[in-house]
Each structure stands twice: as structure tokens, then as C-alpha cells.
Length: 238
Length: 296
Image (cartoon, each protein chain N blue to C red):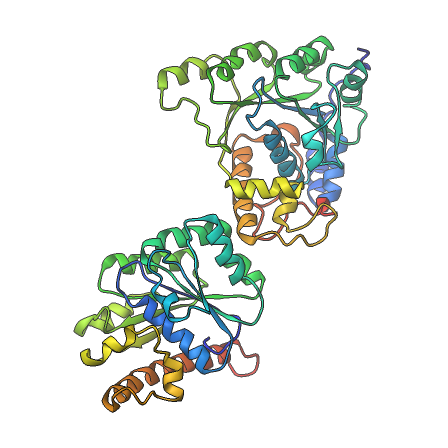
């Protein structure tokens, strides 16, 4: 996944504040940290939070407009070896997937050797579960990863039970950052991949340690998933 | 005009022959079908302009080609010919008021290898065309069962357009007469006013109503610019068969629209009316044209 060039990640949730932009950001930073080409698309035309972190890499599109759809979907289908990450705005969730279905994006992607991967953000609501199940029913072959952002949408002690109900083979957990550290993430000038390479000295040692211990397990999950996908697609190691 | 004597309709083949035919490859089956089919004429028209007649004609040609039914088309928008621009290979521009051109269409119905003829009637010419078909004895031949005759009457949203229904009625008693509600340009047909709707739509016995869904404006315009059949656009080809590089999103919208229209034609049994033995094609898959023969 994250290391497989040319993949398309659709990061989504039907609920507000589920941590979608954070995941899109982390994945983008992981790709940059791995020195692999990546571009992103922020589908919130009003407040593109994901786009703000990567002004040179992320394009803001309005999927309610056909020009935005062309800018997005035609780019996703380009076989240029670049990983593409789409941050699906929760208010545009229905419209986004309705368009995906209407234009036959998943089927065309397969014909072009591109298999989109859904990173669906779980929460405790029945609506979220129903949305995930609906997507799975529509595209049963589409790989789905359920993402639990413990900071944005804590699921509590029943987390395992809730996540088990999602039709996903894989799971990512984005742990909660300590309250004193979380604000630093809002700074658009903070590059997570550069932070890992060379932590800025103007940040306190405590914050640096906390941030690093938050990022590393997430990147490890990305790497692990990437290796698993490589093994699954290998002709020899099954 | 002079009309060649019309022969009795040929008997359709026996069950055994039909079984053998089903085993043929689609193109062979289509040719075989052509030899045994009763000639069919599909007239697409309206007395009002700008209601999307040529769009419907293009959709019909695409649908039939996707189902391996070979067609010939006549564009009566003389001398320019919009349909001809999109389907130049199978379309001839004719003047339906000219005896020579009438002969070109009607007198060749039985002798032509291609048994399905589509006539795209120019704006304001439907009544005139039907009168011409009546005068030359074609409608009588239809009554006698020599030809299949399908009329797609494309409606506009004005009262005057709906009043055409009554004017057309005397000509289409023996035709498979369909009222076509074309929503390509967001038209409504007084569905919001049941009294008006009933007043016009209940005036004539029809074979059914067809609803053509709306196609995204930009997608429609891009096909216009491309100047190719819808299926060629969906297949991302130019008229010459080269890679066109059309937007995938726009092709996706056109493909979905085509599939919806095909569902409508399937619903009213168009294929059974004009080519009962033709092998059926599945809905056009994403990125594919179901019409391999059209990709030049």
C-alpha cells in the first residue's frame, strides 16, 4: 500500500470530525518520508484542512462540480507511478461515492491496473457502520481498511466489538496524542516527515518525544500493511 | 413515386434453423438475421425544433449497433445533416420531399442487405414526412404487414408540441408509435399538471412512452465537439479510430446515460420490433464500446 506506487487511497467517513484529514496527512507524510511520489486531493472546497498542510502537493476539488470531478477522477486514473490520496469531506461523502458509481470509476481503475483502497473511519454510530456496509455491498472486491482514530472518535471499551462489525480485513489505529501536544499538529508549517528526519530544536524535548512516539507506530502500521499487500500480490510468496 | 411491387413477408425460419442461427458468431448471426428479417423503418421526428430528435436518432443507431443490428440511416436535414456528422458511414442526407430520394429510401427497403432503416426527420417535418409516406403507399404496405414501422415522436415541453400528438395520430395507426420524453435539456412534460398531461397524452393509442434521461451538459458538449457516435466517445476513440484522450469522467457519464437509454429501449422491446432474431448485447461496460464494428 503506502509503498506501492500508483495506489489510490480514498480516506473517508460519513461523520464529521472522524480524523479523515489527519489520516490523509499521515499517509502523505509517510510517502514523503519513504521518498516516494505522492499527490493528494482535498474534497472540502470551503475549508481544505488537508490541503493546507501540503499546498504544493494537494489539489482542492469540488466533487459537486463536473470540472472538479474531471480534475479528481481523471488524475486518479493516470498511470504515472504516483500514489494518490483523496480526503473525502464528510459533507461530500454521498456525492463522492454516487459519482464513483455513476462514472464506473472502480471498474475503470481495475482495467487500468489501479485498485482504490478505502480507509473508512469508524465511529460508534449505526450510520457509519451502515455506510461502510453499503460501500462493501456495492464494491465487495474493494479493499477496505477500518481506521480508528482514538483521539477524534474514541470508541471506548467496546472498540474491538464495534470494529469487528465493519466489513474490513485490515485495521489502522491512530492513537490519541496527549492534550498538551495535540495543538502542535494544527500548525500547517509542521511537516511530520521532516520532523522524523530532523526534529526541530525549537520544540521542547517532551513534545518531540511524544510526537515521535505517536507517529512511529502509525508509520509502522502503514509499512506493515504495505508489506502485506506486496506479499498478497506476489506470485511466489503466498 | 414509383414503388416496386412489395413481396409477402418472408416466413421466419423453423425452430431448427433458429437453433443453428443461435450458434453462429454475432456478426454472422447479424448477417443471417438481415437476410430473414422483415424490413423495418424507424422514423424519429417532431414538428417542433430543438427537442433532441437527432440525439434520439444517434442513441437509436448506437443501441442497434451495440446489439449487432446493422442499420442504414437517412438524415432529412437537407443539405447540412447533423446526424450525418456523427454517423457518416451509414447516413445519407436526403430530401424527403424529393421523389428521387423517396425512391432511394422506400424502394430499396426490400432489396437492401441492411434491413433496418432509421430516418431522422428534420425539425418541423414529421407531419410532412408521414404524409409523404402515406402518399407513396408505404403506410398501406405497413398495414398489410410488409414492413415494420416504428415512430419515435420526440416531444417538447410546449403545448404546441403536445398538440402534435393529435395531428400525428391518423398516420400511426399501424405503427409502433412511441412518445419520447427527452429530458436531455431538463424539459418537463406537464407531469406537474395532471389535467394538461392527461389531455394530450391520452389522445392517442401508443405503443408506449420512452423517457430519455438527462445527460450532463459538459459531457454532451464534448461529444458534440468530438463529432463521433456516443459509443465511440465512450471507447475513447476518434472518428478515425485513434486514441482520443477524452476525460474519463465525461465518458463515464455518457456510458451511464447510454445504458439507461438502452434499458428504456429494452423495456419497450425495440429490438424485438425491428430485429427479432438479432443476438443481444450486454450493457456497455466501463471503458468499452459494445460496438466493435464502429471503431474504425
